[in-house]
Length: 332
Image (tube, rainbow, N blue to C red; front, side, top):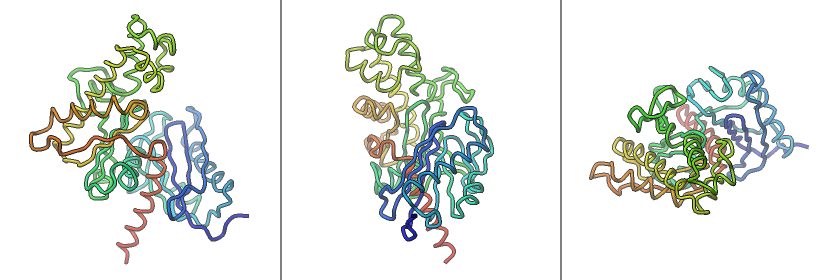
């Protein structure tokens, strides 16, 4: 039978085709969890239904009463209208203008907060992770793509209505490789895992990365973060140089942002950083400090993310709690 007394917050991470629902008690302990996938061809209507089913399955397995859910926070890749709770664009699935807040509120009869997934991850690091207590924290998460987020005085930095801080689409190379957004020389086009894998595949094909060639071949789908780490450990110097160069470009972008907002903490996360923090963190810090104004040099710390895979889903739940408490204070 469902527990009729336990109150909880629900966090949801819609990471492209992967989904994670986690419920948290009032002390932020995980009390329910469910993972699912969405087929790339699934439309928005069917996808939202699958989100609802995933949340319901998590609650059923943990015997939690849906009526005791205090709110839902859902982090999604891509730009978000945070006021309306509208997912504006989800390129991996082809969804556009999806009213997530409206659909989930109707399904569960509770408040819903919709935010960018990297914003959610950086917010979690601000509340409970590597950036706890900082006035200004920026995050750069490097994986298949590159996402960014910024917390300023406890709030997610955003525009008038939409999420922002798309650091992956900051230009770092004049007339560089074409990015998925259509522009050239974006940070994502030179420092994402896909960009790195493509360069490493060429190095392997040329014979410059024999260990990577033997372990993963030249198919970029097989050249993931773990394979890159193993390749470097085995002695593939070409792979190490490619990753150092990618980290340098991240540092160039970070340095530009430091000149704008002067964060105390720069959190690096994502699969690439998790696999090779000792390579990425010092390279990014070095490149950033070379490019900031003298007054900002060494005024910020570059640190690896502390919360790993749970950052996005936890941050979504934490933001839902914060958003609701803010509304209640404004109404009182």
